[in-house]
Amino acid sequence: MTETARTDFYAVDELLTPEEIDVRDRVADWCAKEVTPRINDYWERAEFPFELVPAFAQLGIAGGTIQGYGSPGMSAVAAGLVAAELARADGSIGTFNGVHSFLAMQSIALLGSEEQRERFLPEMARMEKIGAFGLTEPRHGSDAVALETRARRDGDSFVLDGQKKWIGNGSIADYVLIWARDEEGQVGGYVVEKGTPGFTARVMTGKTALRAVWQAEITLDGARVPAENKLANCRSFKDVSTILDRTRYTVAWRALGVAMASYELALAHCLSREQFGQPIAGYQLVQEKLATMLAEITNMQLMCWRLSSLADAGRMTAAMASLAKRHCCATARQIVADARDLFGGDGILLEHHIARHHADIEAIYTFEGTDHVQALIVGREITGLSAISGRRR
Image (tube, rainbow, N blue to C red; front, top):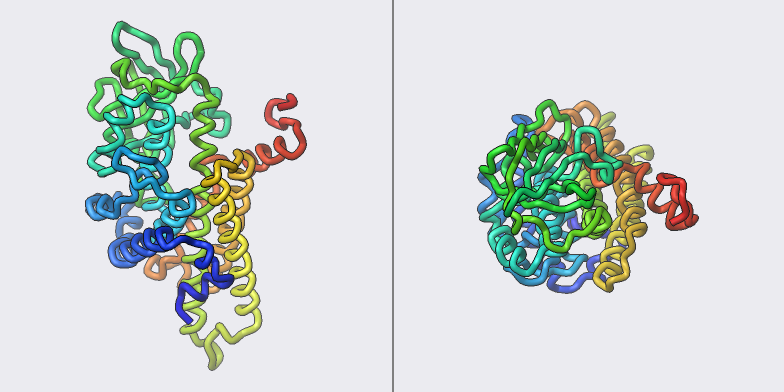
């Protein structure tokens, strides 16, 4: 039985189209050849693997589901499969793509004017220009709606002042989408181009997860942005929430990718590692853990596939995406912990890869809405009561 067959226990591949399988397999093959052999060294040194970007661009996956403008226009299922395969190889690479292809590019595709889409997206699809998404602030994470960054009109420009934190790709991006409130209190998205005076980005250090992708602390001190760089169709924070709702489902797929990688690594280890005269895979306690891990992965595969199918049909809701993000990330977190446990002492050595996944899942579990916030979004949907605002929806 192949590794794929071991993980695809319920033949979920039979639910996929040939096009979805093709892009999934192309990405998986590239990851196996280019990412897995290199990534531990970058992760340990906390350096971004710039050398991988040109070959990554050749995969033609940047932009995900965006139609036109040089983007692949793939299905939501295919985009999810790609997200899973990148995370299966490495969470940092998955995060790099998630920020660039989904948060940054999707914001421009959905909220930009036709002129802005034509101006920014083709070169981002070719990955000649890298994007970032600047929403989170030092004092505002889960309550992002309270953002303090300000934008004031000054002639044919907007002047931005404020701070952002945890901005993936923020220090390397050519286009950083900064969300700020204007003088009337309305939220807008502003594309800040690399080299803009008054814009500084400092790479955050000391991270214990996703070490091979750089998050930045950004300071905006009178950063002047041309008026034509303000997203034309962003009217309120609800538009920002729409972007997060439409990209959050890919985080569930990324959690699935980390879980599958961890299970496969643990299974291979248990079959080869001998103790007390036989492979540890032959012991009851080990088999019970492996069976539980596989059951949960199968659950996640079916959930992710169904959610993305609903997205393709235009039927995915914010609460559906939140439920999948919450369930898959929490489940993956447990699977990775069990896999690391099965490695024993070897589980804390980078050379076995499981230690990297064990650290990275903590970040995936947290970003794009914590477990608790996702629960409140689902709770509001099923009860009609908002535990965040205390008001009926």
